[in-house]
Length: 116
Image 1 (cartoon, rainbow, N blue to C red):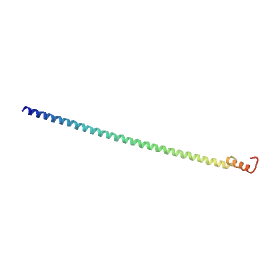
Image 2: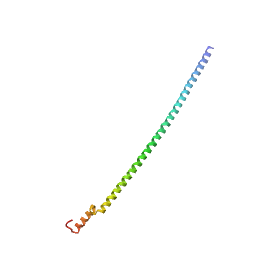
Image 3: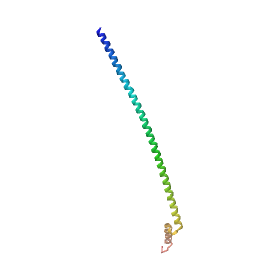
Image 4: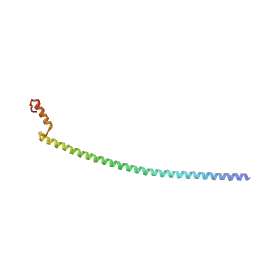
């Protein structure tokens, strides 16, 4: 009979060991799931921050592009105005127009004017 009670004691001890091991596994699993959830929450926060930064960069780039476009338009308008004014001044002063003088000199040469 002592053998039987020893076997029962071993079986009970074995059952307790298995239960303790299962509890450790379940605890580890719960802790791992909690860790995963914490990582997911941190990833969401990081992603939202990155999205916010990307929007800010895009808005700034669009503002810079608008500024450049506006300044370029102003420079082009000023240059066009300068060209118009220069052309108008040359038209008012025939002596100032190089092309007209060159054409007049060519016409004199072709007609035999020796002083050209």
